[in-house]
Amino acid sequence: MRDAEDTARLDWMIEPHVWVQWTTRNDSIRQCQIYDQEETVKYSIRSGENRYFNTPREAIDAARKGNNSAFDGNQTSRRRWIQQWRR
Image (cartoon, rainbow, N blue to C red):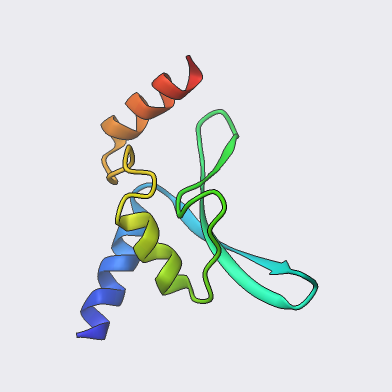
């Protein structure tokens, strides 16, 4: 079951071109977030602006569940969100 879930996570990451960004917090804790780069070269955090995760799986699942629900992996929705964000 875990292999299927991991495959779904990786498939989800491919379409919108997101990645796992690791950060060292408080000089000792390594945690991660899911980032996306928009067409304007502006980065956004898809897993929640002030949320950090201990594993990439946790971060990906948070992003997939819709902490930034305007993104659903569909490029049309993504473009629409970017246009609204720019206003």
